[in-house]
Image 1 (cartoon, one colour):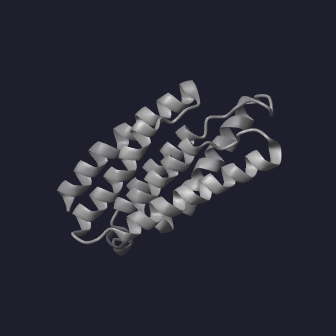
Image 2 (cartoon, rainbow, N blue to C red):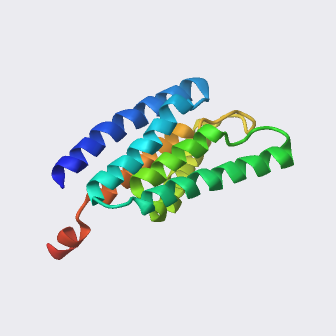
Length: 157
C-alpha cells in the first residue's frame, strides 16, 4: 500500500506543479500533459486496487464532461471562452486520481482559492484568471487528504 501511494505521489505532484506553472504563464494546459495524467490516474487506480478502476474512469468522464459542458454553455451565452478544455482535462485527471466523489471538493477548493486570490489582488473584473493552478492545488489537497487514514486519526482522540 505505501509503495503504491509513494509512486502515485511521485507522479501526481510534479505533474500538477508543471501544469500549474504552464497555465499561470500561458493560460494553456497542454493535452500532451493532461491526457497522460488522466491515463496515469486510471492506471494507478487499477494497480492500487488490483481491479477494474470504475471509480477512476467515472471520475475522469464526469470531471471532463461537466467542465466541457460549462465551457460550451459559457461560449454560447457570452461569445468568448471562459473555461477551456484544458481545465476540463485537468479536472478529468483529478477525477481519475481521486475518484468521482472528490470532484465537488476539487471544484469548490479551486473556485474559493481563485476567488480569494482575485479579490485580494484587486485585478480588473475583465482580467483573465488562470484556473488551472487552482485546480492543481485543489487536486493535490484532495489527493493528500484522501491518503490520511482518518479512522485511525479520529480513534486517537
